[in-house]
Length: 149
Ligand code: RB5
Image: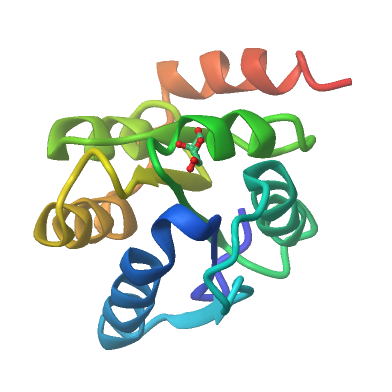
């Protein structure tokens, strides 16, 4: 897996403020934050922002991606259509740990209308600081990746 300490961030209009806070936090943790917007608050479409971030992860330009929309769900669904991406929505710390440790997720989705800012930053901490355990989980992740067309 690529380890370049680069994290791409994107969102739709529903999560711009939370994305800005998460971006600052990612920088403070010592990662390079690649914030690809959007910047302005007009209503936009989460699939395009999810896929744009996912493509930077799939190409290995970025090690991880963090994407946000109102629930995290729609943008996660779009990102997971990109080959090589494994993205999960997290609203709790245990899930954030498990999608890294067991699922080797390379993208995290957050819902700005579901969790508050402190919860988002704590989830990001866990996501970025948890290693994939490999072993028996590696075979299962390989099975997920084999579903990519
Ligand atoms: C936008 O209103 C909203 O649908 C979007 O942010 C997200 O929650 C979709 O999954």
